[in-house]
Length: 298
Image (cartoon, rainbow, N blue to C red):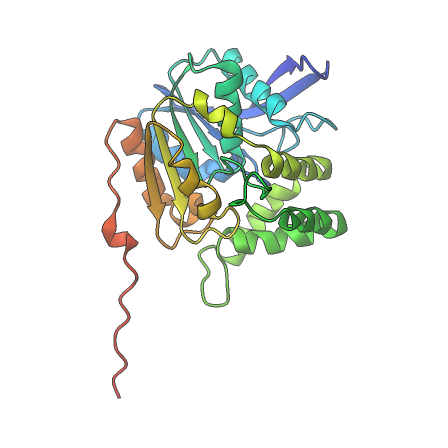
């Protein structure tokens, strides 16, 4: 793990951003989702480095090993943190990969800092274009959902994370794509975040309207979403986003929950590598078909 330090121009304090940097070649910057940290990408690192890429992932402020200031969890500031990392490492021709909340950093970065260092974008289960339901955004998620999340965290943050991660990975009595030790590991990653950061980020990813930002996303985009995502419903996010982006390839993973970076890691890594290498996306129709259930014979 490495760290960059920079002076936050708005808050006028020094912020440390922790990051990992592996491999050589065209750089990818992987932006983690809420409420995890950069370690969520560990199942992608090897395949992407083996593809000949430089792979950089970092902890958002307030999470993991980065600074945990009391303020600065709005997307303008989070995008400034991302820009500080890219500038400090002098990255060029970057592929930005944003998962869930991280998709917001991608959109705001491009709006505020431009695309002169960026070549293309991957958005996985993103919170774009505008997650919260309002009179001007009737297709969004009811605001009461986010209020309940905030209340749950204030009452029992670790208990909330335990229940949340079951939905995150689509775990049920009949379906266990992520076993108990793995879920405990991800709960431990999430627990390292500051409570105030965990709370403030809910407001940021739920209430930020990214529709004005999308005009700046005028470069090739790979959009990926699971059709059983119980955290960021596809109908409220990627289905709408796919209609708003001019250069988008849209991949829907049948049966995939929100945490598809683990549950569908083989397919995700393949699609990432194909996109990096310029191979057009082709929907895997076989995976999209429902499983064949053999008849019961009496």
